[in-house]
Image 1 (cartoon, rainbow, N blue to C red):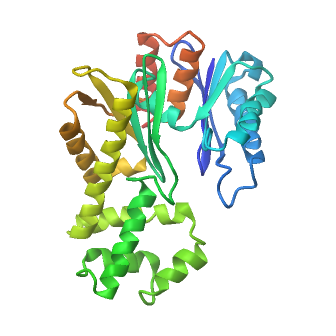
Image 2 (cartoon, rainbow, N blue to C red; image 1 turned 135 degrees about the vertical axis):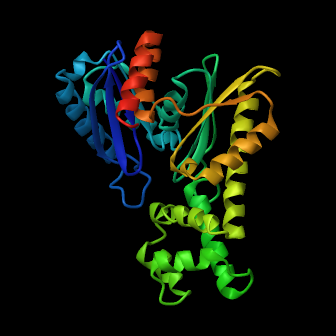
Length: 328
């Protein structure tokens, strides 16, 4: 059995996959992003892992000792070097053995989207970044946080949408559908009330702000030129992340570069179209592929690969069929 763990801000997902490609158990617990203002600190990581491992092992009918290898994709991993000893030790306390590896949760998106094969995955959810591997070497690009990075992410899109709203309200931009879309969504009694909503009621919460990105998508669908430009720029920024990753991984001229994507931002057709268009313009060797597996399944596949016993083609196909049957 191989355990995959995909941590996140709102949830942590667990999946046990057998060598034959059958899913033996799944579980979800609270989020494990301990950088959040609402977090209780780094201790939440071990608590979330303990609850999830106990639940997924109970469903599979095994003990943690029966897990051949595990991969833990943890949000924030590697971004605070002083915390690494605590994060690296947390799974040991839960599993009771050392057959595991920890890394950033972006690795889960790559492993799931490409089946843990060489190539690049770009993640765009609340934040954004890429992770890619080639010949056993991994590279991460982006993911610098919402204050000065995360280009093309849901948060990035929402902040630019809010900026456009304020300009429309002032008369610095012609008013388009975006203004009324946000007025309705935020139940504004006056345009200035947006300050109270975002800074006072939400306390600038990253997730609350990022959740406004679908309203920018809605406005673009209603013909708002400013909203459409924001989504097009998001696609360009995400393509640039991929192109930089390709260069840093050292893909040779003419060598095919598999690329896939994960995260809710790509649910916006306008973003995916802009991203696809920009990729083609940047490099002829990109092979854009739809994601194969969800990130938590990818984490389990990566665990098997790290153990030196990657799943064979028959097992991968069985796992793919199972995922499609569950609507993943």
